[in-house]
Amino acid sequence: MEWFWFASSDYWLSRLVFQRALAAVYLVAFLTAALQFRALIGERGMLPVPRYTARVPFRAAPSLFHRHYSDRFFAGCAWGGAALALALVAGAGDAVPLAVSMLMWAALWALYLSIVNVGQTWYGFGWESLLLETGFLAVFLGNEETAPPVLVLFLLRWLLFRVEFGAGLIKLRGDSCWRDLTCLDYHHETQPMPGPLSWYFHRLPRPLHRVETAANHVAQLAVPVLLFTPQPVATVAAGLIVVTQLWLVASGNFAWLNWLTIVLALAAVDGSLVAAPPALPAPPLWFGVLVVAVTALVLVLSVRPARNLLSRRQAMNRSFDPLHLVNTYGAFGTVGRVRQEIVVEGTDETTAGPDTVWREYGFRGKPGDVRRLPRQFAPYHLRLDWMMWFAALSPAYARSWFQPFVERLLEGDRDTLRLLAHNPFPDAPPALVRARLYRYRFTTREERRETGAWWHRTPVRDFLPPTRLV
Image 1 (cartoon, rainbow, N blue to C red):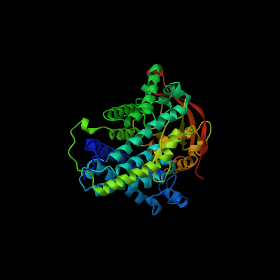
Image 2 (tube, rainbow, N blue to C red; image 1 turned 90 degrees about the horizontal axis):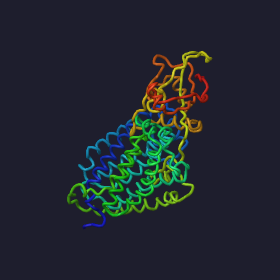
Image 3 (tube, one colour; image 1 turned 120 degrees about the vertical axis):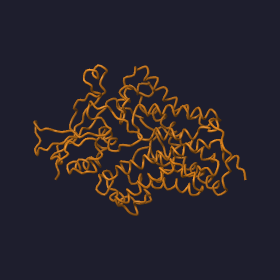
Image 4 (cartoon, one colour; image 1 turned 30 degrees about the vertical axis):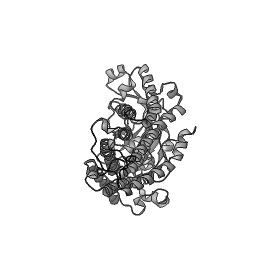
């Protein structure tokens, strides 16, 4: 039976690139989990999983770890997910029967869902839900045994539309600087984690910042509509989204958000414009029925996210179901004008006084040493560094984890110290730890030439007074 209306070989190349790239994003996500979980949510972590699952029922946060948790089991799931993702990057999904390929993609989704649903504050980022929603749709995209189903390709465009259009709307409805085109006078400096080129972006002439902001509005509010137009217009729209996302990759560190958005855009490209598609068979009946059922489910679940898009009280980065099947997205409805950073210090002196010598802990990604050029870490996600940015905005963001973090520094906890770039107490843990809030700004060109510093900082107030183990 030829379901010409249901599947199209024109997208065989797009599907191939999409699946390989999505598997690569999964690989980074699982590696991030495997390398950081012990200090964050492990048995002796700042927010232990067992404590969370004891108070949150399975139905509210479905996860394998409700059944059983140990650090060894979590590590096995994370490293197992990384291995499976690597196999899919290498094309394993096309080397097995269709049903097995679907099970492989479903296993990736289930493993990462299990991690996100017990990750608590550390996994409260929009790109976690975006990866899960994208990964769920990828289960039903098929492999080389069948032409790509048009309905799933449509759902991927619907997802990309919500990501971009939602981000555009939240800006227009939020900070006035988006409407007067001045937000990028501040954003490159005050964004959560600047990259190695952020200083240069910040120092662009202000008229170029206006152009940047206006172009962002076009890319997020006008271009996504074109995703639903006939080819090759939809391919051009996808290309414009890719270019915009690469600009964001160059100017900052947003974990895998930009890369995953690029992956979604690639699924909208008509591969037949690049290479002649092979003659792929129509999908089997059971697969077609399953795709239709999933499409109906996603459309029903899309009602609340669609209403959210139209609401004046639009929420961003919110999941409407515990499986993260259909979510709402958005970023930077408000842009900070001033950058504040928490600087964590320790001393081996038992009493703090005016002459106490404090030594500073160094973080991998967030600004600290003013002479240190910001690094490029994305798509790898430095969860502690990101949460330090939120904590500097308000102590409320740090209420659940900052005190445990300090306690582990005082204990010299090895897993916690591995999250940092520099431990000033390599031989023995400090007697006291404190945290201070500083105002950071990028240096001017003249200051940069004279001092070699990328940042200038001035103290604001104490964030945490000198603290010792009780």
